[in-house]
Image (cartoon, rainbow, N blue to C red; front, top):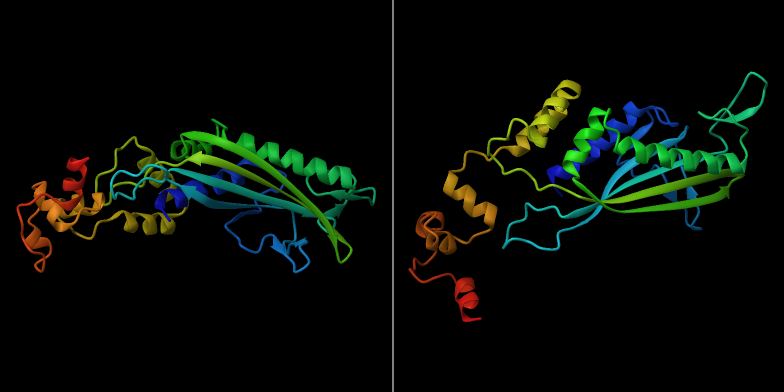
Length: 262
């Protein structure tokens, strides 16, 4: 997992809370049990009101640079949302209506609720006036694919309809540990916003960005996944200093021999 995943998910949650969608502020960050699959394959939820649950799911980096693992590649940003027949309210006329829409609690109106909410989520993510959406786009400079799913069932006499919006995004690489962050870069802007709204969470993230006092040469070796002898061959370090048990050699690393023999 990566720090960029944490930042992207946080931005999505806060953007939706600020957007005033049909579910209000009932935006859940990675809540596992928001939608549960029963033994018979049906879905159920313990939520008391309509909700959106945000997750960062499968990610894949197709091309790595040597052994470096900073790259995050493409990632699925997932939104699960749902409403049940029990999530209704009574209007002034004594009618049971869908929360947020003030329309009768019928199957067509539940479907309308899902479609309207899907649209709200999409437009929130690209809203230029939402500061959290702007930060999210900084962490996800490219949207590659979008998939929408729908599920509905009746369990114990209660109807449940749910939807899923899955957006595959390009995710920026994690910052270099211990390195100074550009003042106008996405990480500096995100941390400044986070410090205003959630200082404790900001402090936790900043502690993960630290490098625990390692020397610059040691840092470069770790970032690129070099062995001690490889780092020495590149004149970054002394192999014997990094790993006293390593046999010192002026020979090129084995990987370099293989590359030169092709």
